[in-house]
Image (cartoon, rainbow over all chains, first blue to last red; front, top):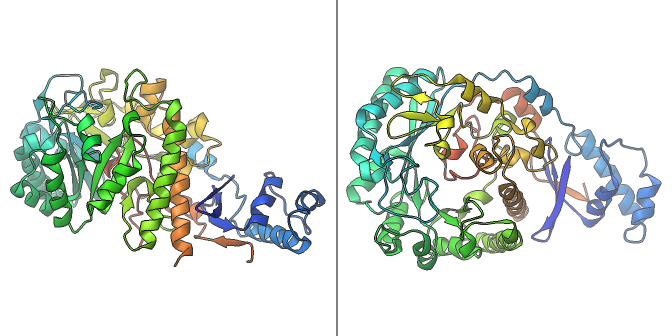
Length: 457
Length: 47
């Protein structure tokens, strides 16, 4: 399978099953329209191709291009066949738990309009995780990670800083237990910044390999959706602290992370606002919400959102060329040393490698399932999980999803988010279409950016 | 080649044979939490 498109003045051709990315000239770009798969190289360019292209290109160019297509094919770089379906079919995956999203607080000091966590409550009651439960979560992941050495813990909420003493207690316990069991714990914390202070900053910088700072963009954008219980906006209180924190981490190993909604489909201005403030690691993502919400993105927003990704792409490479580049999470793609095919098949690992632990110790497939009793998998106090649910997630991969079969993006998004699939279509194997549309667009932008960078060296 | 520039090693098939150690970061832990993108993840075995 190939996918071709034009962006940033480049003709880009992706060969999906080898992972190769090519930039081609107009002759080859047009010629590829005439070639159907499975491709069989001929010794000379077939007449119907010559006939189709003769008014636009010279005989020599046509013949040369055809020969080059044949060479790429023989080198396994174009029209490569799909060897992964068989791997997925016969996969005897022996998953181990390697990452936990720990819900340190089912409470929040904000009332963000779009909060999937029901402003912190997760459709249950407000409450904090206690240290004992947190320690059990660490014991649980150690006991269920077998010989996997790298373990990730993400402190999530609600707002984790509302229960920061427990964050510290769990972290210290994990470090101590990690030494005893030869585990390398990596910690991440996600915060809205309201309670951030120098002492917390210092602890985060000493202990957390990543920190996610929640803010949506400009003051206008942010304060429209992210406000306190009394309705007042948060931008002025958090932005100076976020700038300080990002600088204290040398502009690395963090993300300022926002959400865009139907109210700001011109979100490039919000991303660029972050860049203008000096942030080098940015992420702004589409809200996921039912169509009944006034801020929800729906099919009617597709064109404007896709156009905005293109606008952002153009400004992104312009700033890169000027030496003022920054990272946008969804435009980051590693064409050389990215994840292996196995990871690309299986995705985020929710439900089997990656689990969420609610404040009371209940275990769910991921943070987005917390509070949905159909997906309750156990409790850290018992130390084991419902294997039936786990296996359901483990079996899910890009080849169990009908919609993914002919999609060029499948090895880049790995089949999409199971929670979104379930919430919109009632089935973890039926991806949420709108997310697919945006993902494909972002991927095209990301690869065009990489092509631009590689060709400008 | 005159009509094409190839930007990367086409090694995805090799990684199907040798990959799968599972030591890499869980994609949802990095920043997204609402979408799924694996292509921006790093391989733990990469130099």
